[in-house]
Length: 400
Image (cartoon, rainbow, N blue to C red; front, side, top):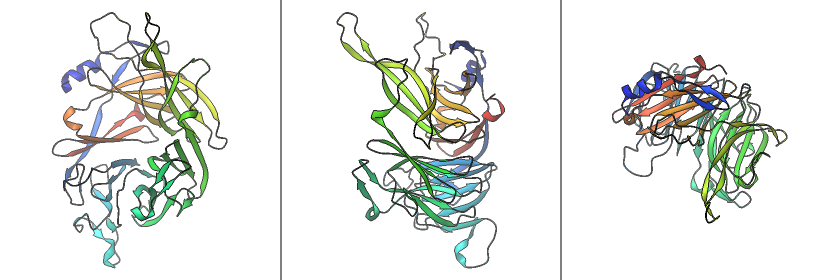
């Protein structure tokens, strides 16, 4: 859909029933902050593996206090940029990048200050997070000789979390036991709590393992979430649970699981099972100290706002879990016309606010997003010729 048509659609006040209340769809205007070109220079990104060999690696984004931290896997580097697009620092693999021109090299041996570039032999930097001290946490894949297979979790142990100072100096790495520990299974995400604790979410053959570390890198707890042990509300009979996502709970003290539930569809004539259909979604708050669920509540399903020309009752489906911020649960969905919507659910009032986010299809060659604790959604939107760094200020419009 063209941008103009999408804006016209989104400005219409649309009424729907969700949790028994009327809801209104609002446009949330984005701010384009700066653009980044494609290439191998220090102020460019390699999103599509420009050398044409190997599978493209992750590019991930984190934003803290208006500063953007980008882990560019294909280029083997982590760059820090201001909200105006100024390159502030870089940690890079010299085998994959030319010598810096804009930044000063910290390896010259001189007493250099200001905007620095430091070397680190990155293999595949990926997920990234930043704490209040601007310590940078970056996923990295270990060399093949350090990888092993764990029979207990049925997973390959191949990943660690590197820590760099705000100046880009390598500090240490986190493994399963803490600093210098055994590599993790596949890392799904890295989170930082309000107390600067680091939470590493991993995926195993059995389900999910979540590792919780204090600011010094000491292991506080390990939480296992099994696929065959997902909770089911008492109000639902014969439902199949499926974990849609896992993130910090709204208060940052535990974990929040978004679980979708599906049920069998039965042919009325033959009384035989014909498939499954979406039933409902629930949020479960997991206490990290006890390993038990301290709270749970139902989440509204996504109902399309596109008029299909019939009088049939809209069929809800599940939102995609984004994360938590400002005490609210953030979710996203693509409507039937291809437009992107975000839902912000307030657990206290049990109310859902819906927003339309305008992204042109030409900007979706590659994309990644980051939701800050303040409720700012930042994104990298890749067009044919440049990557656009944008954000949406949910912190200014939500009541959460």
